[in-house]
Amino acid sequence: MPVHSHEIKMYGEIKLFAGTASPDLAQKIADYLQTTLCGRDIILFPNDNLFTKLHGSVRGQDVYVIQTTAAPVQRNLMELLILLQTLRLDSAARITAVVPYLCYARSDRKDQPRVPITGRLVADLIEVAGADRYMTLDPHSGQIQGFFSIPGDVLTASHLMTNYVNTNLRQYLKDPVVVTVDLGYAKKGRNFAASIDTPIAFIEKRRVANDAKAEALTIIGDVKDRDVFLVDDEIDTGGSIVQAVNLVKEGGARRIYIAFVHPVLSTDATKRLAALPVTEFITTDSIQISPENCALLGERLTVLSIAPLLGEVIRRAHEGRSVGEMFNE
Image 1 (cartoon, one colour):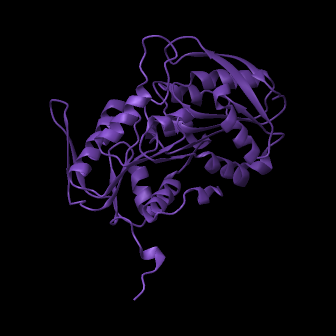
Image 2 (cartoon, rainbow, N blue to C red):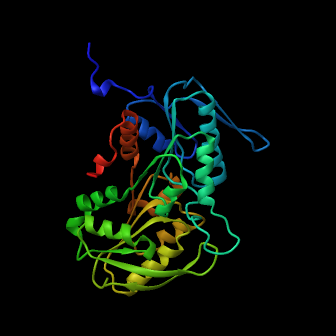
Image 3 (cartoon, rainbow, N blue to C red):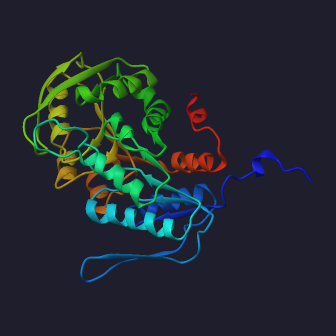
């Protein structure tokens, strides 16, 4: 009997494992793929050492480890690395690290003397721990891809957000304009604006220290009497976005929407956001938002799930099919 092309498998069955950082997202990915998460133990000993054990063999299987590396960063990163090594030592055929939010991505170059490039270190650690491939979503800078020697899929959630805007908000908007929170996001902001057919403006800001603080300076473009979409890859402490909202409000903006991929939301960021005159916050579940933070933002918070995106990419990677076809590339 001839074997149909869709029945040919380069590796064994898909095996999904998850760390403890994003259980809801991992379960949604498993549901999308109509499979279950594989059992594993992750134990924190009294001496703060982590221990993992698989509930079953993965020998010869195609394994995907889902673990975002947001806070607590060191715990979540070590979970990922230890899981990868555990799978390697159990003779998995292929191991893919699925890291929706990649930690240390801001440390991508030596921009001053005597500093590390920690983003490169993290890439090396993931590879040495046992990953054959990686997947990540909207890293802080494109050059992060060059830190990996293994192949990977660097995805974007931008189309999820623009689809949401076009489907649910477009008809209510008045002279909308996309505004990037800094010039570093200009290219992605331009793509966002093109997808919802609006002009674009920019906020020029300058980082003035080695901490998370930055000083927003001015708006390049027109926001007066317009509905504004402030876009960025992540919101960390909320300092930059607060300055951005104040700037566009002073510039005469009508309604303000904020779209950002990664809800890092460190320290009191959510309280800062909740106090802003913003109509809607649009983000993803690349990082799990606590119930307390969800309650602070209330009905103004919209969380778009990246599970179908990651699930489909996992399916295509497993079957050896093009990922670019998903985006007409």
